[in-house]
Image 1 (cartoon, rainbow, N blue to C red):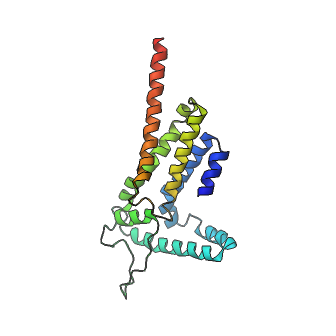
Image 2 (image 1 turned 180 degrees about the vertical axis):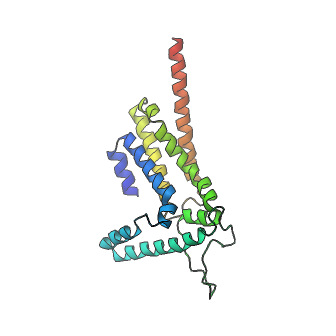
Image 3 (image 1 turned 90 degrees about the vertical axis):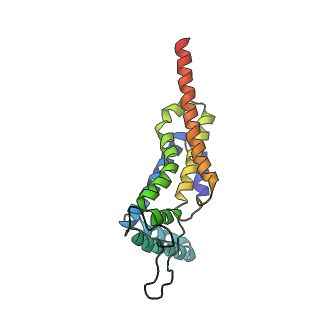
Length: 204
């Protein structure tokens, strides 16, 4: 992910970076659905990983297998989830042993709080990305340094978002939420400044 971020910032135009951010956000927000319906290419990713390392491929398959059983369990209560007390986890019906591993933050939220909780949580991260995409005309009127800065900020936020598929770095990490809020605030400030400039031009 870090390599993708670095290469994108260096070689893509600001508009292309923002478009890539939107695509990443769409992949993330639709992942529970594409995963449950078999549309997401899990097997292709496993085979690709196997060409580089059997160990990494095995680790990836282990994650996918756990996601599948957790997602099937979550879909039994899709709207509001299972709530707390580890009810979103999967236990062996005979031994009572916990047989699930919750790595990704998305499956933790989806299992506990259902689609209502999932969308309520992650749309706060996606909103600044979408706002950046919707305001590209505004950005094109700014200095190139501002355009690159906002585009890179948007891309970083999308990488944080996609990182929640295999990891749960959003748990108790206020910095990530600060990054989302600061991007939204910055776009709002640029819009206000544009409005002030237009008014001043009309007065002159």
